[in-house]
Every structure is written in structure tokens, then in C-alpha cells.
Length: 163
Length: 249
Ligand SMILES: [Zn+2]
Image (tube, rainbow over all chains, first blue to last red; front, side, top):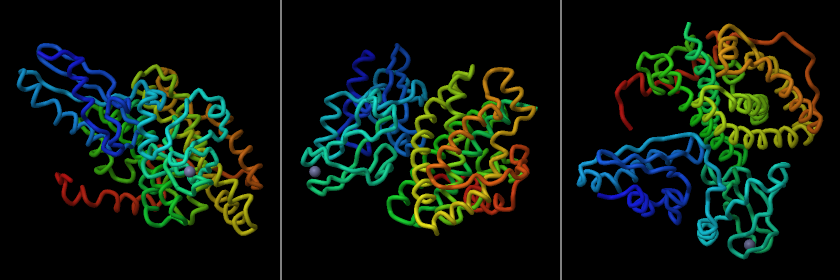
């Protein structure tokens, strides 16, 4: 019989549908996995309330786990929870490095004093690493991103919003 | 009267109607970035609406889910503030409507984050991050348009003059909110007003806009009294699920 940790490890193989370089555990979407003799229970939380990928993520998690759960005669549930509210602080340094390598400028820390004062954060261009960048729009290609431009290499790029 | 159901409907309907209207900007934004921004904000509003309406359905205990409440109620059964159903108009109209609402939502979510009801508090804490971000966007545009050209200033000033009285519903206390407040799971909407007025004053000053002279405020949305516009909006939003009640897509 697999332990809760074993089930969690299996979820490392489920990519985020919009940012496939990160898996749903690295994204902080998977909050807890609990298992007992009869069941496996996964709790997930949305990055944004209206994130349209949540249904797809729940389906992907079911597709990954349910054949194995039924082999062991256990039921599987995937439940959506809202607390604690998702924060970009849950992204590890390695997850942020993967984002940058993928071309998305990673978020800073929400405890950054500038964020608290509503000032613009320093956002580094994921292509040339210049910090001479400017905000084009607070909203980008998905709910979790803003749109920036690099003033050195002139590339437009996404910045993972810091929330 | 089921105060909890009524209160949650108000929260859900505000977000739903505003979200639906913002979605209508898809492909019509003045620039691509704003097309994306308005529809992203609309998406957040719909997400919040889903959570509130799901809770409302549970509170009602009649087996209705978010879809049943969104698609199978008549206009008079909607509890959104009339501000949310004001037409999109031009970009400035939409920005002013959004700014007035965002400035309220920031206060509402901050207050509801302390609700004695753990589910309400959880959704409020989550929504608070989104409403703060929305307000950054709408207040920045208030300043850009107000402190822009004489024409843009004239246009948003006119939008503000028309829309401000419709904010009345947002702060109107009644038996439902009295119960919500005394039982500790909701907030007295009137208590949100001072902080909202402060945000308004600060932004209008930066935007070179004048606060319109006090006028009689429009209320009634919370009791199901709506403007004509809501019927058209719902007709479009509800047509598919009403025509094919069990349709899946
Ligand atoms: Zn660059």
C-alpha cells in the first residue's frame, strides 16, 4: 500500500497545464494528500478564484492517481479549498529558477517593502537578465501574470504577479 | 427570511453581473492590453461569484448549485447592486464603474476576512488579493483619463456624475445586513463607507476630477429592484442553459 508521501510524489509528475515546466506540487496548488486504508484525499487550492485551469488540474490529478488507487481498492477524492489563500511565496527557489529559464520573470517576495508600499518591484528580464524593464500592463496572458518589456533587449515577457 | 442566503446572493450577484459585463469587452478593448486586463478582471469576478453562489446554494438548502442560481433566476430574484448592471458604455464608463466597485470590494473583503464563518473568511481573504490588484488597475486609469486630455477629463467626469449615485446600494444597511452583523459573519455595509470615501477623494484629487454634488442615491438592487438593463444582460447570459437545461459543454 502506498503512503501519503508516495501519492504526493506521483503528483510531481502532473504538470501545470498553463506553465508545464512546473508541476502542480511546485506551483503550490496541491495543499495536502491524506490516505488511509479506504481512501486517498487530495486538497487543491486555486492560484486565482477564476483560474480556468482548476477543472483541468483536478482531472489531471484524478487521471494520474485513480488507476493506482483502484488497484489498491481505495477511493480517490480531489477537493477544492480556499484557505489558506494561495501565495507566490509558496514557489520555491528552484521553481522560480525554472520559471525564469522558461521565459517568465518569477515573482519577488510578498514581504518586499516596496510591494507593501505599492511601489514597482524590480523585474529582471528572463532573456538578457537586465533590470531595465518596464510594466506594459498589470494583466498578461493568464490570470497569474503581468506583461513587461525589456528596455535593453526589447523583448516583451511575462512576469508572474506577486500575490 | 434566510439572511445568510440573501447576504451570500448579494456578494455573488455583484461579482457575477460585473464579471459578465467585463467579459463583453472581449475583442472590444481600446488596446489589446486593456482587452486582456478587463477580461482578466472579469474572470476573477466570475471565480468569486462561483464561490459565493455555491455557498448561497448551500445556505438555501434547496439543492441549488452555482449554475442553478446564475442561470435559472429571474431579474427580480437578483440581488446585485444597481451599479454593477450599469452598461459598459465607453471605456471611461467601464473604468469609473470598476473603480467605484473595486474601492468598495477592497474594504468589503478586508472586513469579511474577519468573519466568524470560516468559509466566508477564506473566500474573502483570497478575494482581497484580487480586489487590491483590480483597484491598482482601475485607480491608475482614473488618473490617466482624468489627468489626461481635456476630452478624456470631460468624459470620465461625466461618467462619474452619472455613476456615483448608483453606489448607494453598496452601503445600504437593512434587516439582512443587520442579522449578518449581529451574528458576526457579515459586515455592516455602511461601516465600509468612510474608507471608500477616502479612496475616492484621494483618487479624484490625483485625477483632477470633481466629486459631484450630493444627489439622491439609487438603491433597491438588494431587494431585487433593477434597471431595465439587467433583463437584457440576463437574457444573453442565460439563453443557452435555459434553452438546453441539461446541456454539458
Ligand atoms: Zn532583456
